[in-house]
Image (cartoon, rainbow, N blue to C red; front, side, top):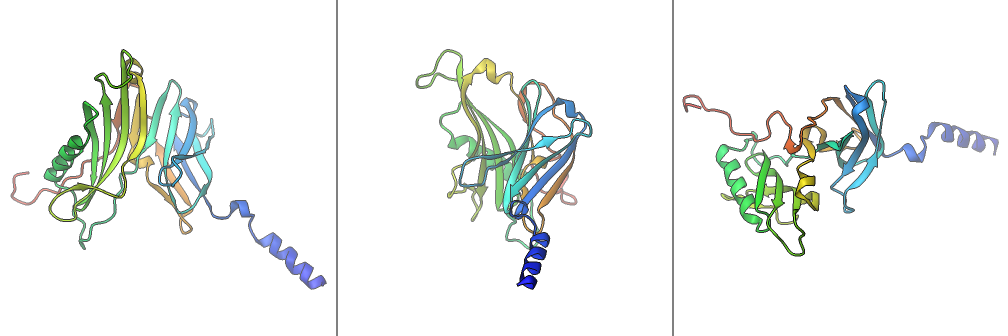
Length: 252
């Protein structure tokens, strides 16, 4: 009996707490921590819509962290700044193509996807495709849309704002919207145009699509540059519309 108790005590010491098992952490650092009012990791892939996990930031070092995140999930990190300014991660990653050597989107692919995206929405009268990213078979499209014309039960000066992430695929020669998902909604608001014009929202793929799993339960986003405080809805990335590389002698 004494041996059993001793073994049980050793197991209790060596076994990590249940609350710490199966969770992960996302970290990063900002250069002006006094401007950041909130840090959040958002799970947009769960069956439950937009599960949010609050984080914390060190006001001296600028290091932020979001802990106790369920594994086998994908997260977008959101940084809120004073004055209503927001930096928000967006996941523009797509599955690899079936080709042994990955082939990027051509300029013709990007233009074709833009036209299809604009043609599929009959409600908005202003459609801005912020990004088209992917490969020869899969594409992610970030779309900012406004309905500025009068609509049902609308009030003077009121608009509908939608910010959505769409996915496309090319099973043969033509691009089509992925059928088993509608789209991922970031924002869908009925607001005054004057309120929309004050929004300062910067989307950043570097803060999106953060995958945590058993083999990699922690992710460090490194140094994060805070966004512009100028009004507008914009996407910040090194290169979001990937086009095929120039071929020798083709003049590009």
